Image (tube, rainbow, N blue to C red; front, side):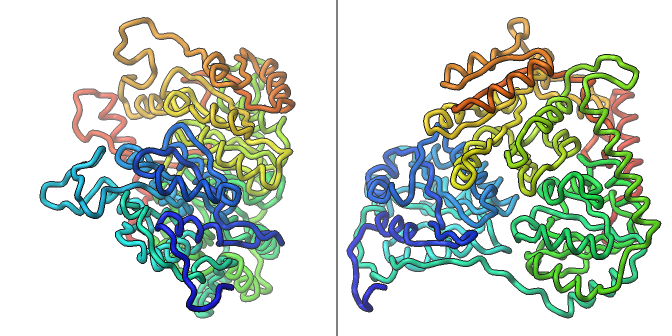
Length: 628
């Protein structure tokens, strides 16, 4: 502990880094730095001052150099998710375009309630050299910079205009990153002159501090109200979201479901809460869900939603549940707990489930309901068994599909390997066809549904995984569209020794959006490569050759048998491996398990097919809950 009244003269940047380095957290009996380090691309806006400060602490706060600011921040998001929000990383960019590249990543973190610290250069407070390189000038308001764009996608935003401001702003920012309810991205604008300005900081500002993540106990009156509704339920259903894992409440949720014989269905974010073989695990819910989960949701009279924000893919745009069903929502965030007039239980999932369990002592779901759930579960498992096979029941060959690739990875991977995917068709296919082998082993980024997260997120997840499970693998499933959008962290992973297994499923473009286009009566246009404006004949990218150019081991396979051999080689390898293969763009999709999903369709069109599709879309609205 520093002696009261003593000060240390540091630049603002030095003080920021030194304070970060002093923040600790205990995880599973280990005391580690709260900040796991960061990602940096230096430029004139952050290299001379912030870069100097980071160099002095590089052993405590390791800094990784990415290839793109957006992907660096994505990697930081994936690291935080792999660490269950108990640790975070920072990402720093110079100014101007480097900073704005991170805006998409801020959207991912904000949507998914994940911690991300962005430290970005800003224009000079003195304005003496204005306009400076990369400055976007606002003629009527010189206080505005491109950094203000982050206000819409952050939980905490500040511009440090004086070194003393750090004393209040930085601890508040850290509190936001750790708060279960307000968790999300933090943006600190660091003007280039202020970064280097010195100030006599209290020495106590740099004392080591051990943080603990708050567990907010629920209001007992809310518990009592929820218990009263649940006790009257004849067909209760438990919806398990990602918040169950962040709360560390998987064991409590499982015990609660077992004690009261309540079937469990999962959201995309909560996809790895229960193991696949658990008798009460009735599959994924919603648009990318299962027949089993959606059949139960349609008949349930009480929905107990735990740790989920109930987004439209989970609720089928609010058609998955019966209009008269009561929703009890357990969530640490008041905003999420009260959606669609849910009966809220605002508090930590682990604490709330424990109290609800006591309040429901003696209650169990009727046998007929649990028997129905078991039947639905068995039928869905039979469907998935067939869906991941390369041949039909009559022995006919099926085209290579996402589901088949997912099935092979699922069968061959270690139980503790981590699977990462995002955007396009893969999230739906993973959600439907993956059989969970271990809790928390699946990262499907579908809150912001952000193309490009896959490989960058895999790199960030691998950095976190190496800290505790270096002998396991991070497996990235990515489509050709996302690969072409953002692939440079294959190079990052090779350079840093953070091995990935990247599986590139090439279906010739944006095939899932082509499917949506066709399903709404439209002709294929500008999604599959062959349907775009081209000057040459369409051709397949040699993804393996491209990956090898970035230092990865890579190969292209043409069958599932070849894939199995390639996957075994990738598991045995010590550096990043890429396996590329072509999958069918039209006939290989999982066709079962989908609820209605609201998309805008033209009310007026010259096309009869579009008009018919619009009529079908509107007919699906009949079950939509509106203001109930």
